[in-house]
Length: 70
Ligand SMILES: [Zn+2]
Image 1 (cartoon, rainbow, N blue to C red):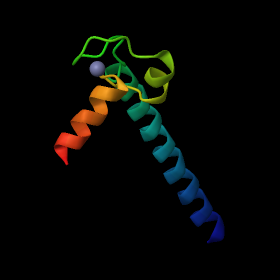
Image 2: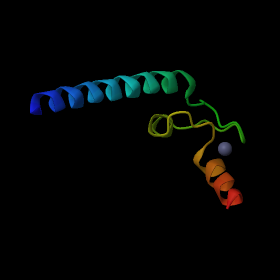
Image 3: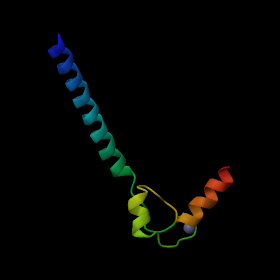
Image 4: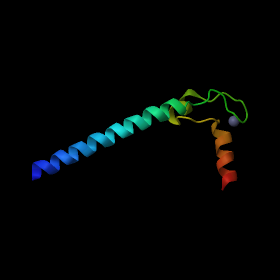
């Protein structure tokens, strides 16, 4: 019985990891960080683009946007 549960858990974990990997691959395809801020056109530092996959704005514009959003 314990073996059965272990197998089931292992299988579930495998499926979960697979789903996560797929999601990351899909997100990676879409979430390309912009090289230039779409709001002010300033160059987005590589560090920020790496830290925030899919970011489209520089830190200033992103903060302004979040402030406005409340
Ligand atoms: Zn900007």
